[in-house]
Image 1 (cartoon, one colour):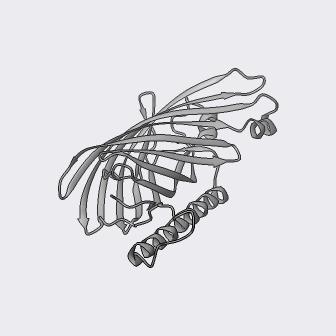
Image 2: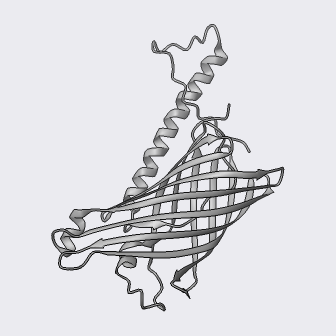
Image 3: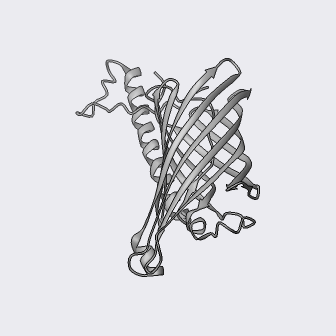
Amino acid sequence: MEHMELAFTCPPKDGSFDSAGDPGRARALRLQIRGRGISCLLFFVLITLMLILSACAGFDVSVLDTAETLGKGQYEIAYAISPGIDVVEWSDRDEAETDDPPSTLSMNFLELRYGIEDDIDGSLRIIPSAEGISGKLLFKKQLFRDEEFSSAIGLGAGAMIGNRGYWDSLYGSGSDRHAFSAQAQYMLTRDILRYSSITLAGRANMQWIYSEQPGYAEELKEFYHGGLRVVLSRTFKGLTMMLEGGVEVPFYDIYFGNVYPWGGMMMAVKLNKKK
């Protein structure tokens, strides 16, 4: 796959490019500076979009990934829109109502990804809202790769910290909401066309939701759910587009909850070139 050449090499402090001695080097430095400006502009545009479109506080349970890795020392920034688990609705849900499906919401998140090793990626997903902020730390280890197929496993953990001021305005002084999650997933990717791939992924998730309101006992609820995803990905010159579809199934005790559809999309940009 080709990669966008947006390097972060700084120009000389005196502002000179030594173009008389090496015109090629001068041109390369100008392109690098221009690339750095484009990268920074894109970063702020994505953050602005995320803050404007941000929904209620929740957890993302999307895959929006492939078994491919970035490569050691590589950076990527991504913006995604997908469904999410509504932490507030889940924490208020009566576990005895097994026919009542969990509440989901449309949300968006920003993801920062870094190539720790050639076969290991680490990423951070951030979701802000008026109700609080949630984040998730993910690690992906590539298990296998040949000319057509690759596979990987992913592990992650997340937390949602509620905005005390927001909850106080609804329930009174001392209201509080927090949530924590852990997940695991397996991805199998096949190259189907030049720059394109299809990924089949299976994932499982567990969430602990803590709520406290004045006059009520503290509550800690556990929820388990999992699903299957198909992810279509296309990468060209450092820009990656992903479309995801599939299903999610909540589990309540020994009861299979309602199966509901899942989808999402992501745009990612690699910020530096491979050495």
